[in-house]
Length: 618
Image (tube, rainbow, N blue to C red; front, side, top):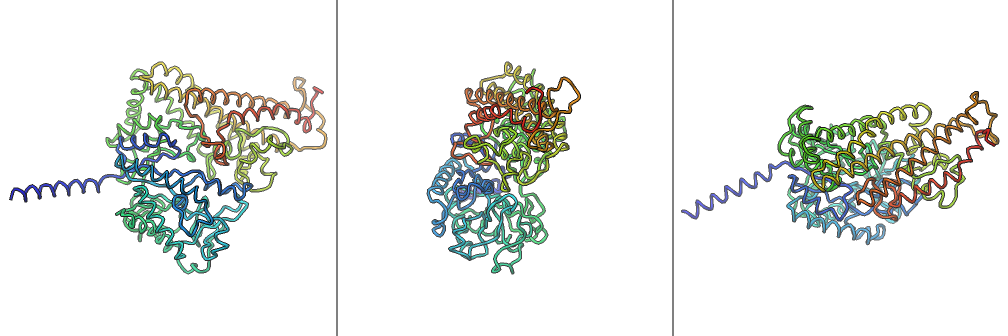
């Protein structure tokens, strides 16, 4: 009898434990650009703050996709993203995808899986599927060809995703998902679809319009979406994952037909069948950070605001942490992830002040919170400058405003003076558009005096928020409560200085292009008609010389910041991890050298403007 009572008590305890585990809120920590050397430390931090799942999406950039045609920038959108066949290579695809590349990613996934199990964490993957396959695959297997999924104005080639209604493709997916979930305890998948080189057949909002093979045209898009979600759960079930959560994003217009039919664990565009949210996001990923490519710019005000909203819901939480030195966010989450902050700005300020006191002491905590608020104000100001990407990402990086020379005739540059920047700008149209700095992904929405006027005024307001913070943060370094906190403040100073340079560079680039656009280029310059004796030539020539000098000085400032940051071992700007991984969406790791090259070219070609405007200095 005693044994029976003990057994019943144990069973009751076990049931209660399992019930608690099942009802535990899912908290996922994402770490998009975490260095491999920091992966375990970040997993440990995720476990410490109370996360249930940790990101294992990291893949090596698939440079082989771009090598198919380096003149086409479009593959760069998918090169850095995970997709199923970058982890798992079915036998049928071995002739089309490099096996050694996939093997490296798979081994990395297995290593991450061991770390996740060590800390009792489930795996989360953000993935881009069904992702395009090389054209050769469809020439040899025409029945695999699914929808064309590229953005025509931003691609020089056509890219096709596989048709998931094809039985052979469907089987490859299910079997590969099972292998994926065995390599690491993946329990949640967030899918970016119908963008960045992925798409579903006959979906109405594909960039080229609804398209696909005639063999599956009779299947409704709603049924296809539901089957695609089933595929992921079916594969996970084969690996022993009882309940795979899967969200299909970027698939609008079919919600009414799909959402009521979703199964447990499935969501579409972050909506479940029960009317809830699939997840709530906290923090920002690199592409959506307003001040990217500045690395790890503190955003605790944003995170605290998002955390307050998340505490009103029981939906899963996605938390974006950029790295182990994100101590403001990490400490805020440690204190308040499971202990609600409360509503309103007063409670938010109190939570932020508490975290700040742990960095600079209670006497100076308010000063640090003020810096954080200024950063958030600057981000709000630049927020509207967004068209499929943030301006400093699309312009400063994708158009290489940071590294390309500001010269009158860029089309005349040759050799390395041209290729170190031209090979890495996003332009699928003509070379004329490629030379236009404000043609952002075949979309000139920032050109002319109006565009420059708005950006100039916005930049002034941003600098008014950011520049005073540099001296404040420098003074606060003396108040740091420890070495980790002092390093945080040192990084904050460097990142603020870099952000100021990025803002100035963008303003300079847009003004430069506006002046060039407003200036016909005759064989000989027009007669000088300036009425003021202090101007030694055309007013535009004077301003262009001033502008180029400002940009050169700005480049020297960036070089100085990068040199200081390298000496301190503090990353301040996001770059490719290796020179061979430089591509359109990521600056090269030799950024200082490229900036010096830019300066040299600008100095060598400064008198080229005299071919456009006359000067009295001749």
